[in-house]
Image (cartoon, rainbow, N blue to C red; front, top):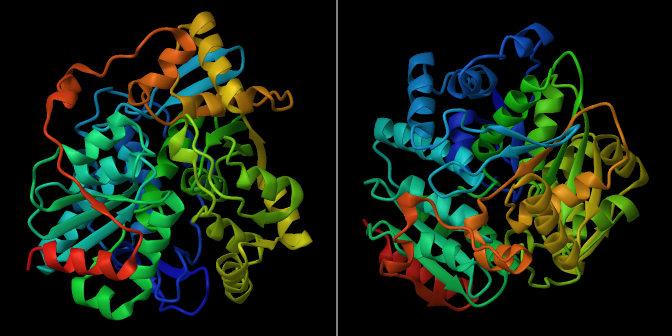
Amino acid sequence: MRYVSTRGQAPVLTFEEAMLTGLARDGGLYVPETVPHMPARDIAALAGLSYEEAAFRIMRPFVGDAFTDAEFAAIIERAYAGFDHPARAPLAQLGPNHFLLELFHGPTLAFKDFAMQLIGQLFQASLERSGKRITIVGATSGDTGSAAIEAFRGLDNVDVFILFPEGRVSDVQRRQMTTPSEDNVHALALKGDFDDCQARVKDMFNDFAFRDRVGLSAVNSINWARVLAQVVYYFTSAVSLGAPHRPVRFTVPTGNFGDIFAGHIAQRMGLPIEKLVIATNQNDILHRALTGGAYETHGVTPSISPSMDIQVSSNFERALFEAYGRDGAAVAQQMDALKSQGGFTISQGALQGLRETYASGRASEDETRATIRALHATTGEVLCPHSAVGVKVAQDQPDSAAPMITLATAHAAKFPDAVEEATGLRPPLPARMADLFARSERMTGVENDLAALETLIEERRRA
C-alpha cells in the first residue's frame, strides 16, 4: 500500500512513512494510492464481531507490511482498552429512522480518542523499533489536543506541543490539556483563533530546516492514520443497522472535514452510504461551498460549539483531490488561492462530484440550543452542542428509507454551560474525571509568531 500527496509533488510513501511524516513536503496531505474494496460478504461478516476485530479487518489492507498481523492486532487491543463502553461506539435510537452514534466513551470523552489512541500506539511501536525521537506539534479547536496529550503523555521518545486558541475552548477541554504533569507534553495558548493555530503548524512543516532539526511529526487530522481509524465506526454502525443489505446515511458535525472524509473512504471501500451530510454551525464555510461553489473565508465567529469554529478545513483538500480527478496541480492551485486571496471557486465538474457524495446544512445558535432542549425532553438524551448541530441538520434532510446515523462527537459534560443554558441541567463529568477542576494547570501563553514558537519548541523539547 502506497500513499501519494494531494498536490502531486511529494515522494510516494509507505503507510508507516506517511504516518510519521504527517504533512507532505509539498504542503499536501497523504491519501492512499488506491482504496481497497471490501466485498459485501466481508462487510456482512463484521456483524457480531468485537469493535477491535472489526477494526483489524477494515484497516489491515491500508497498513501494508508496516506491522505483522499479530503486532497490528495487539496495537488495536491496547488502543481501545481504556474505553468505558464494551461496544466502544454504541448506537442509541432517537426516532423511527434516526440513530445517534455515541463516540464519546474514550479517555477524553470525544470522538478524537478513536483515532488518537490508535495513532499513539502505532507511533510507539514504530519508534521503539527504530529508536528515533520525534516532536509532535498539533493545533486544536478543543478535542484533538486533549486526545493527543492523553495518547502520548509520558512516552520517552515523543515530545508533544499543542497549540489551542486562548479563551476559545471550553473549560473542560482546556483543563484536559493543561493538567497532565508529564514533562513531554506542553499546552500552548495562542493569541488568535484555531485557523491561526493551524496555520502556524503548517508553517513549521514548511520550514524544512526546522522540521528536520526537531524531527517534526503531526497528529492533526492531516495525518492519514487519524482518518483511517475513523473509517471503522462507519462500518460497525452501518452493519448494526443492516448494511450491506440496505443503505445508510450519515450526518457529521464537522469543522476540519476529517471525520466526514473517513465516511467517504468507507463508501469507496464498498459500504452502501446513500449520502454523507455535512453539518456546520454559524461558521458555515463548508455549507456555503457545497451549495454555492465558492470556498471563501469570512472570519470565525465564536460559538457554543467551539470545536467547529473553523474556516480553513484542512481535510477538504482531500475531498477536492478526489473531486478534481486526483489532479494534484489543480488542488495546489486552489490551495495557493486560498492562502493568497482567502478563497477559490470550485469548478462545476468538481462541485457536481462533491454533491454526488455530500449534502450539507447549518444550525444557528438558537437552533442548536432548541435541539439540545427538545431531545432531552423527548428522549432523555443529553447532547453536546456539536452533536446537537448534527441532529438538527439531520432532521432537516429529505425523507429516505435509509436509516440516518448522526455522529455524537463529544460528551455533554465537556460543554456544561451550553447544555445547562438549554436544559437547566448541568451534566456531570464521569467519576474518573470528577477531580478535573481540582488539578493544577500548566500552560504557556504564546504570541501568533512563527519564529517565537519555533524557538520555544527547540528550547523545551528533550534531546
